Image 1 (cartoon, one colour):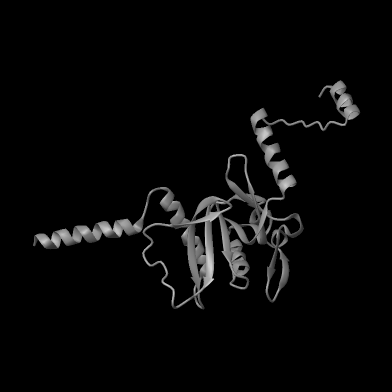
Image 2: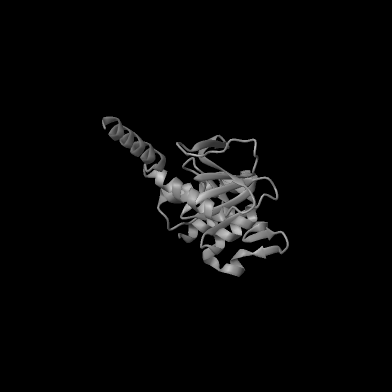
Length: 216
């Protein structure tokens, strides 16, 4: 960098940035950085995970089991972004991304154990600094009076900060392996992204079977 430029920037009190990244990438990165620092983003109660490369925001009332299931998912090889408090901010591309507040980064509260450090326990591969939000999963206590999804024709949608996301509700009840269900939910999401829908496949088979039997 030109020494005269450095001296002049110091004399005038003007910040000077240098980056090896291409101009457009550097500007976008700086814009996101300043946006996060100046606005502080939005903080919500939940857990943010990287599951099979998908940014999954897990929501639910306090005590429903979000952290315990996140811990189980980490032990299954997935990555924690943030537990309990999730910072949501808009990227330069208009997407929503999530990260952890600096104060609680890598940490998780497990009732009965207290505060644990995921990075220390499971290594750097168990954590992610930030992740784009792609799917929202809500955990809610089982309500016998409520009608839950049985077929899954289409994924519901949930709006977060004026952005719409695919949304899956999972009822919580004793004996349900929620971490496995969450994994399957993410796999279903990925298949839907590829246009694969098992319900439509079953519907097609039923129609074919019905037509064959009608002809007999």
